[in-house]
Image (cartoon, rainbow, N blue to C red):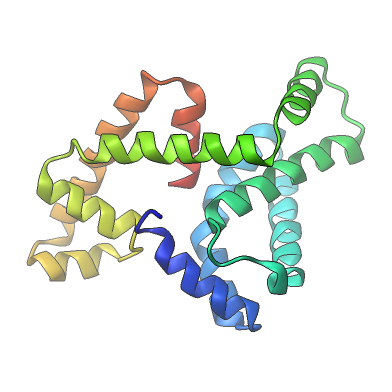
Length: 194
């Protein structure tokens, strides 16, 4: 299991017990990623914000059924995907290309396939991260996988916050460049969920 998911596991365990602080931490961690992902599909800022609220209400209501050993990142991605499908059905939007695309994805994919694709994307991203210079790799992993702030990372490595920001920026630039070679899906996944 990737290192960065350990923080989510603890938050999910707390959430299962009704811990509102754990819920808020997950919301803060995923809110912006989901916003850009959903808005990319539906275009409307207001509708994207409304869907995010619905998604997190669903997560709160189903908190007891969450499995902490499964990827919360994958789970919330799947819930978001289903919310987008529901949005198009409920709004009665019949844009030919979008509805055909979504229907095609819906019929061809199942949970196992999605998990395999998700794990493949994670593996691809991880292999790219391992090609970063050692210090940049550590800084990036602490930021994205451990959820440390730039200030916390700067203190840990005795660096300036600007240096940490520059290291993260260079890491993202390198990863994006390598993912562009792999295609749009891999790049979008990284931009919205990593």
